[in-house]
Every structure is written in structure tokens, then in C-alpha cells.
Image (cartoon, rainbow, N blue to C red; front, side, top):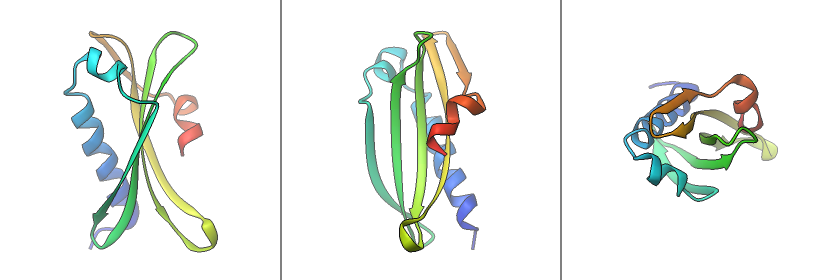
Length: 101
């Protein structure tokens, strides 16, 4: 059975791959935040997709996957990308990712 951290990372990677198949116009129309619950290897996880506009004018898209733990603690994994136009996409920097992990 995979470890929880592997599940969190795998789900984030899968969602990022799905998002990258969307057009620029579809991505910039994403809501500010959406969430859903998924079950992977008997773990109930929350998957959130965050979209915001950076000061640079770029759109940050973050997939955050988490599992609640004991005493209101959470285990998270977050990753994503930044887009500026239909042909400009780059990985998040650590600084851009940090508010979500």
C-alpha cells in the first residue's frame, strides 16, 4: 500500500496534468477556489484548486491535496504552475507555492 505522501503527490500531479490540457481561456476562467473530496487507498482526501492573479499579471494555478489528521492538523501537498499567455507556462517557485503547503 502506498504511503499517504505518495497518494497526495500523485493526485496533485494527476490534476495538474488535467489542468494543463485546458486552454488558456479556460484556465483564466477558473474560480478562485474549488474543492472536492476523493478517496484513494482508503484515505478520504480533500483536493482544492486555487486560482489567483499575481502582481506580475500572471495567473497562479495551485492544486492542494490534504488529509485531516488528529487535533485539527492536516497533511498537505501542493504544486501547480503559472501562466501568462497561451504559450507561456512555468512551474511554481517555492515562494509562490509556500502559502499552500
